[in-house]
Amino acid sequence: MMTYRSVLRATLVSCLALAACSKDADKPYAVEEVSLAQVSADLAAKKTSSVSVTKAYIDRINTYNAPLNAVIVVAPDALEQAKASDQRRKEGKSLGPMDGVPILLKDNIDATGMANTAGSFALAENFPVKDAEVTRRLRAAGVVILGKTNLSQWAGFRTTDSYAGSSVGGTPHNPYDLTKSAAGSSSGSGIAVATSFAAGALGTDTSGSITGPSNVEGIVGLRPTRGLVSRSGVVPITELQDTTGPLARSVTDVAMMLGAMAGSDPADARTKDADTRKVDYTKVLDKDALKGKRIGVLRGGGRDADQTKPVFDAALEVLKAQGAELVDLPITLENLNEKGLAAEGNNFKHDIAAYLASAPPAVKARTLDDLLAFNKSDPREAKMSNIYWEEAAAWSGDLQDPKYLELMEYIQRKAGPEGYDAIFNDNKLDAFVTPSGGPAGVIPEDGKPRSGGRGDGPGSFTRNAAIGGYPILNVPMGNIEGMPVDMAFVGPQWSEPTLLGFGYAYEQAGYKRMPPEAYKKAVAPAKP
Image 1 (cartoon, rainbow, N blue to C red):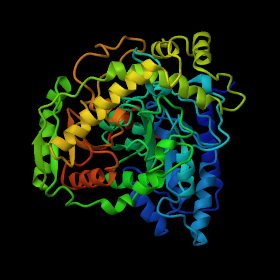
Image 2 (image 1 turned 45 degrees about the vertical axis):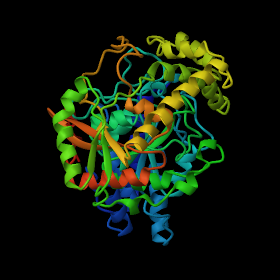
Image 3 (image 1 turned 120 degrees about the vertical axis):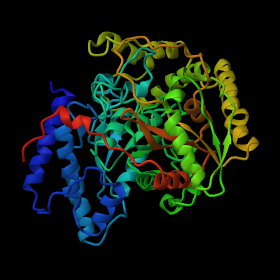
Image 4 (image 1 turned 90 degrees about the vertical axis):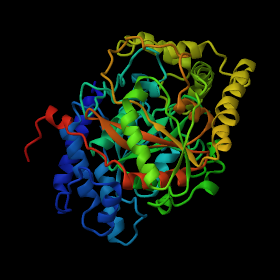
């Protein structure tokens, strides 16, 4: 039986062989640190072809992925997709600026032709019969769906013990220092973007899963307003908080990706207003966007805040120089972790059964109980605990359960009207900024209990934003002893145009992203 690693190797070899036989004689295209916007422009100007660009990314994955564990599989038809894009351009039928641009998907997003595993062998045969809505939209824009990226298994919702990565994809490693964490749960997507394995990547976020990798990989990541991007065809945790979002190396690139992803979907009721809220996000990118704007400053506390203070202070000076009025926010967010996780448990039991109901017949698990039984019997999965799942299994899975409704009312009120809404309204803010997190720490040993209780300490700005449905834009702001850190721009619901404008203005005037180099030393590049 072939493993996923052997499938990846076989796919890479077949893709490279196809490229070698291609009649397209375009010169090689150097993709490292080339922006999505530049790839798009070069394709439009016919300075290169999608086949050349796609092959260049596959070459980089083939060369550098092994020590990073960022990519699980390359799409078997990636170069065929690229050839189709080149043919459209040749015929004057380009689908737009994203046509021919290669993008990677987190391996919990349905895409035909590849298994959607969520990092678990329980879904090894989960080959979807149709694309997730977000995948369909990208294909409709001409995007080359390049492959699937590694992740924290089940997007991090399995155990409270340390578990870096997944049983399918292995442990992801930070490209700035291979001993350090790549964060979760969209770790593979973050690594892939930082190392130029694709022009951009999709992640998913339930309570920080885009913010974390963006921060420790020194890239731009956006958790959109809940309901701007469809979740149908995405392995769920909780309908209340889940969203898909773009990761890239610049704010412009994220804006381009968001434009192709966003929109209403009848299969996701939360997105009913998305079409009326969606704009051309590239047109809001203004270097003067911060002038005259009131920006709150949330410093937080603890070790991360102490470590990030010098670079955060420097970033704040850039905001002031760009004309922003800064307002210190001497507040502590309410800790909603314990109650939020309890609500997630009931949601997960309900939502995962709904997703599995449409899985292909080869997938035997149809309920949370089935998944628990698989994990306990399969030796590849049995080595890790299932604490979140066991807590979720104790729930009814009924979304009208009185205890669940009581929790939902409380956390939504505290995160929304009495939380971020009050912060924005009481202080008359356009947005607030805060460090996205501290620098990456050493990868903990799998199975090691995480320190600290779930109900201890101040609230998490990412969890509270997720519960309330607010957007977060993460932009690189500096490095600490060679490890990158981001600044987060947090705004009211549907404020993506504003946040992208602010992030762009800061990006143009502030810290310039430092590309990783350490990962290159871990492999001997293949000879041409």
